[in-house]
Image (cartoon, rainbow, N blue to C red):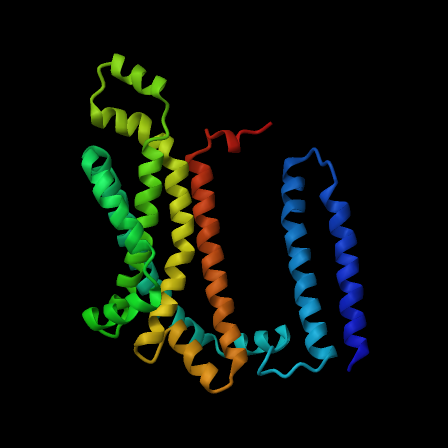
Length: 287
């Protein structure tokens, strides 16, 4: 055991804990400075977790095939940028983006149709719940057989995974507007489409963005898992399954890092877009 690494990790953890405790209770009047503090707190917490991870791996001499230290993972990332970029292009820029757009778009259009045709709500939504409960490992091989080994089969899996969350959330959002507001639109002699675009869709925006944020992570998971069942010799899922067999666990963690970063940035971009569009929502009003 290397006690120096363990001691450094513990001291760093306690120091960042104390700093975050003080930062969290600060009452800063300047909004820009407060925003900076809000960003600094999770950054310090993440740095403490990485240091604790590094200290445990180094201090207890954990075998790298079980858990490599963050420094080893970072070294693999910096030395394999070309491979990681090719995998990212194959999995995310092709399968995830295409499947996400098609799945969310078709789910939104289907929700409008379901709202317009009431009997579909009782017929389609139960079927949707059944399909949404299907396991990925059962869908992925079928999609590979239907659409081939390249990215279209992975995009098809993403479509299946993202369609019904968008459908269910949009239908719920379209029903979120109050009866008083609907009666007011009726007194203005508004037809269905005028009421939809001027009242019901704006009220449904928080639900729609909730589905988009959920689907941003589901799409990436679905594409990676689908690549386990057949893919060209490129892609995040292919690389993970191959490198695990070779005991190159640091490369596996490098792919996990890229996937986590892509998913986090996608979620954050959608959250910023939601804030810009639904600024009127009570949760975004300044006190």
